[in-house]
Amino acid sequence: MGLDVSKIVADTGLVPVVVIDDAADAVPAALALKEGGVPIMEITLRTEAGLDAIEAVAKEVPDVMLGAGTVMSLEKAKESVERGANYIVSPGFDMKIVSWCVENDMPIFPGCVTPTEITTAINMGLKVVKFFPANVYGGIKAIKALAGPFPDIKFLPTGGVDLSNLSDFVVPEVIAIGGGWLCARKDIKEKQFGRITQACADSVAVVRQCRGK
Image (cartoon, rainbow, N blue to C red):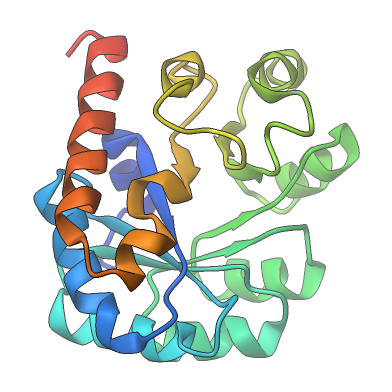
C-alpha cells in the first residue's frame, strides 16, 4: 500500500464519519472536506449508497484518504477494498475481518472498549483501535485510564464528540477524533457543502491550537 494511513490520520487529527444517501453527493462532500483541511473521509456502509460512494471518491478524488466505516462482515470489507477503500473501520472487533486485513496489509481500526478487546487487538499486531461510542464508554477519562496498561495503543474515539468538546480529546493517547459533525448528513442532503468546509476548518484550528502548532 502506498499510503501510510496511520501517519495521515495522526497528522490530520480528525476523521470525518460520513453517511451518504445518494452516491452523487460523495465527490462534492470529499472536495468540501479537503478544502476545509481534512483530506480524509470515512464513508459508512450504513446506507445502500455506501459502496458506490466509495468507488466514486476513489476515482474522482484520489488524494483524499478513503476509509470504509461500519464494516460488519468480511464480504463487505473485501468489497470496500475492491471499490477503492484505503482502510477499514468496524464498530466492534470481528476476528475474521481483522485477520483478513492483517494478512493483506490493509489498515483496520476495530472498535475496542474493554481491556480484553484491546489485548486481542495488540496480539493481532494492531497499534490503533476505534473507541466507540466514546460518550457512552467513559469518554476521555476512560481512554486515559486504558492507556495506562496499554501505552503502545492509540485510540480513535467517535461518538459524542463535536466542536464543543473536541479540545478535550486532543491528547497524546488519541491518534485522531472521528465524528459526523465534520460532514453532517443533513448538510450533505441539503448540498450545503460550504458548511462542511467550515466545520472542518474550525475543527482543524482547534486541533492545531491544542497541539501548539
